[in-house]
Image (cartoon, rainbow, N blue to C red; front, side, top):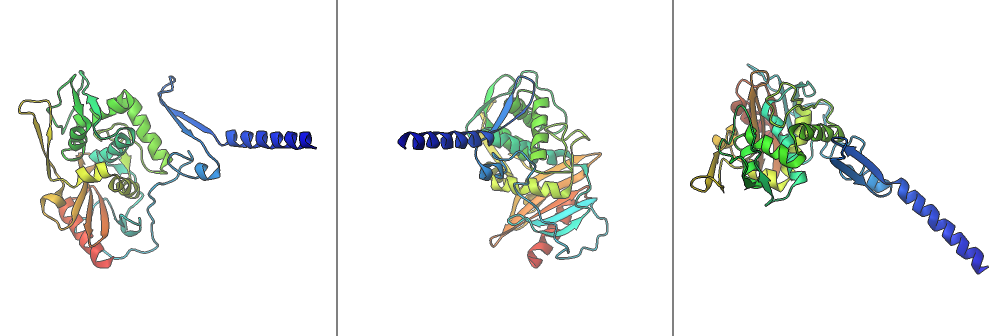
Length: 315
């Protein structure tokens, strides 16, 4: 009798082990050398867990397109697309062409920053590539071939929109710009960002495209990340840095923060000829946070302030 029980127990344990192995999911991205391998282990709960669990597209910070807007706006010169949303809940208060795919210029760097903070930790050292070449806005003082702390590069990425910082961080995380762009696009797929695609880590390419609702998702994620939300609220910053004077000074472009808009805490500006003037702004008052996305706006600062005023009045 004891022998039969022992055999039954062994068969049961073997069956459990087989089921457990069946829940192991391997998913690889990058080149054929297996540069990046993600592994999710667990049962149904892990498979439905989103980041670190299922590899089916699922938004980690969904945005709810409600049937009706909370307020109306009479535009004189409207932006091409706009969205106002509750950063905490994801509820949309106002939308204009929310799912129209458009070039987004340096708003691309929101995804760049999310990919970087997910792969690094505060205090990491980054070697600036010796062959670093860039165009457009830049920190401009990155010492090629030297190792620097990652915090000044994140500041250079988010405060002054440094394309040189974006390229240095991409090389640090993935080894090359192409691999990093593949990571950005994989994140967009996994996060169910249907109208988002990237071809650079900096946004100068017309292939960097998204829509207002996808940018709201990325904004919600960025504001949850202490490393990003902490730097995004800064009008100016200084960092210890291996250059003459040993200090790197950065001044930001956020029109809400520069104008002293009450409660402004982020996030990112962008401009190219194809994209026009783009802006994602966030403000917090009395425990409520609202975000605004503007794509191809004639005046991002004034339009963002107007939309946020309406959001705080309605919300």
